[in-house]
Length: 311
Image (cartoon, rainbow, N blue to C red; front, side, top):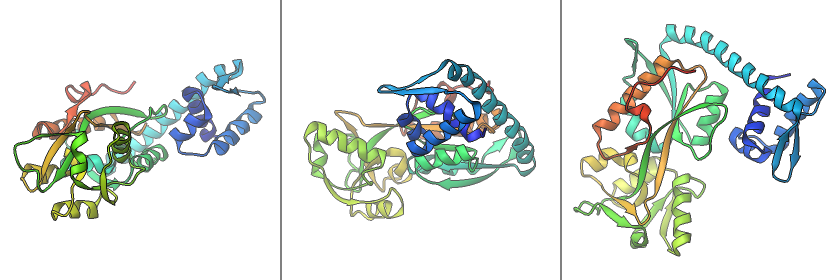
């Protein structure tokens, strides 16, 4: 019996299907099925049954689920105690940031303090799917990114909602909003089709029967930013991605309405993240949001009050 098998079994049981669990764990369905089968062989009994609507736990599976969850929690707590001891000496935290929140949050998080200690922050850039997997595997203590699916094996804290804006050099007048149907007036540099903001953009365009003038498809990094900053392109992005340029009037931004297009930024916590570090992170994030009124919309009471200790 392996911890991976326990994790896979719990995720399948909670998600209700192999397809949903494979997306959550970022593994193939055949690989997931193999791990569950090996667990069943080890235990000598069938734990779940597949059917057209997903899976159903057998009586043995329902009983084992409680024990498997307890084991995973105990292992996480044991690892956490050891890593807390190490981290107390090293005073280091590893934070993953996806492109959407990094412009807003990274500068303030470099000055992270916890219980009077200045923390050394090691950042990692990446897309949300990879950052979540890095937290899961222990490579990161925290990931701050966009989530579209619920995670059953990691603690998540909703932080704030970002509205998508049209951003560019020719938008410095007093107008603060733009109807989605008016976006075709602008030649856009957009993210790849598999990125969430682009998916939201494309789905709404299809719903309204609007043809968007997309001249370039680029990652939301240096080249895309450079083209917009040089005045050669417009883009659709969160306000926070270009927050410094918007606030110093290098670029203008108009919030997209009819409908409003939004992204939800969450903090994904390793089981080994201490309550004190979690609170320190939330304190810094809260202060950053308060320093930039109107940039984002808080969606969690945890940004308005001290974080509760972990259960």
